[in-house]
Image 1 (tube, rainbow, N blue to C red):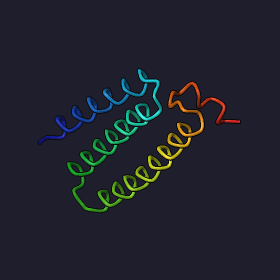
Image 2: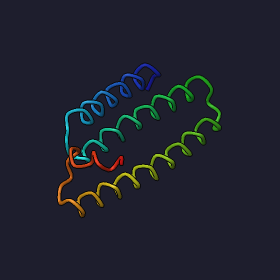
Image 3: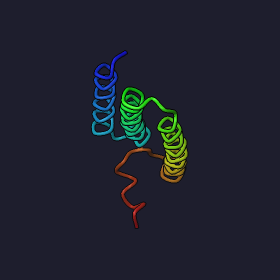
Length: 100
């Protein structure tokens, strides 16, 4: 696999995630699109580090970012679950008054 193939794959993954995040109204589907976009950025960064400077320090940093993203998504799913339990709906329109 070359750097160009990895970056094209990351761009395709980011595009699918962007479409998923913008076209859906269900909170969980929006979060899945956001997760795809973050994974595309991580893939692109890992490919750049691997092909330009293949030392493991950059890979460790990406693992830390991946762990932080996992915790962030778990908190987001917890908010989506709470929203569904409280209002009986998981649409993004019912989440607007969470900012108050």
